[in-house]
Image (cartoon, rainbow, N blue to C red; front, side):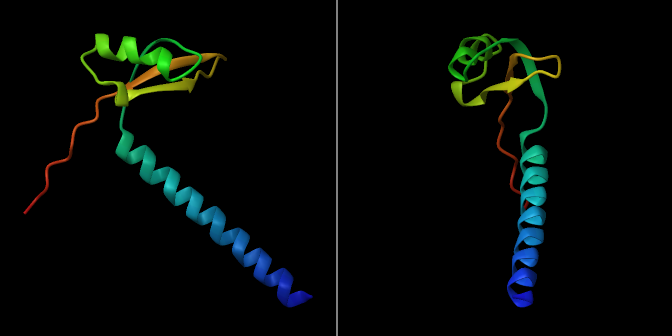
Length: 83
């Protein structure tokens, strides 16, 4: 019984660490948002992001701190590969 609890606790800790690392990596890769307009779904953000010269894959619908949602347009440019 104690062995099972120890395994479960270890698995829980490893899961939390993995999630924290994944979140940090995603935030580092995404970079800054250009916030423009309000939205209910990602589709609502495609037009506003296109007005900034960005494609549909740069559009996200994210929650605002004050409530509701807003469009986040990400300038996705490939990082140059260093030799």
